Length: 334
Image (cartoon, rainbow, N blue to C red; front, top):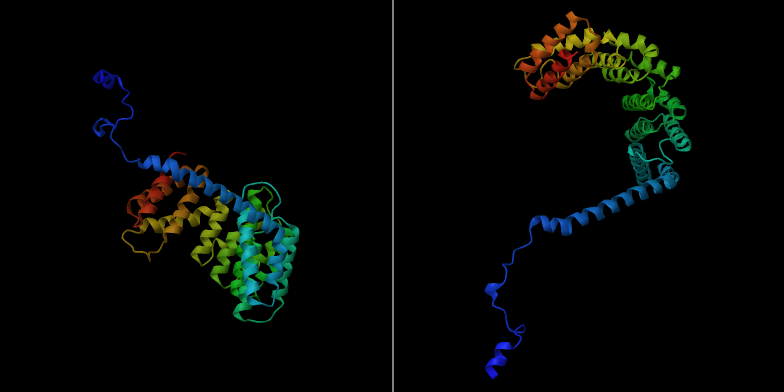
């Protein structure tokens, strides 16, 4: 009787033989990523976006405080305010979302322009003063309010100014003009063009080169004369920037200069880093000639293709050889 009960008794409470259990496997890396890492990345992204927009909103509201710091007699406050406002403008320039922008705020542009104008009145040649002038000129390049910033940038470009200040002022005009073209509103300011033309005749090749770059972002009918002179400049970088400027406007005036660069690059075999034609110059010339290829006559296109083919085989830098191969395909595909 007891045996029968024992046989029919529910054995669910009895210990289970471990040998009949399925093997226990450690969690896979994919499972751990799905369980912990992915949610963590999502949370981090959400927090990052929140912080970014919070910073932008704060910058929009607090730029007056940063500007006040820049005017302070305390060196640390000046530095903190300058870096804060410059970073806020740089972030604002890159964002794609709509809404109020620091970079198009007329009051920000007027205040910063006035601050640069005040510092330019100083006759001091102390490094700290020059650095502040150069920094302000560079920062104005982040603003898209040409009517407010161009007058003081023209003043900063004048021959009487320090080289660093002039350099940053010309570069700022170039970046403003470049963005104006992208927005479909090219700059046509005659006074700025005149000052750039003055810079393009400076004895300093760096300043002439920067002037050629900046002039290339103005309508060609306004900058043609100055750029034509720069095509024959003694400095190779200046000639190259002028050639690129003409190329940007699909003008064949650049072709002789570009061909000279290509011929020199094609003549290099085993030259080292100090060769006659720097890799950047060779690449830029090839890209420019590639943009003009469809406009070239058959004989010129054939000569250019031969030079580019030689560069693709013999130029010392592998990256330039690859660029040459791509340009050659573009030229032959016309």
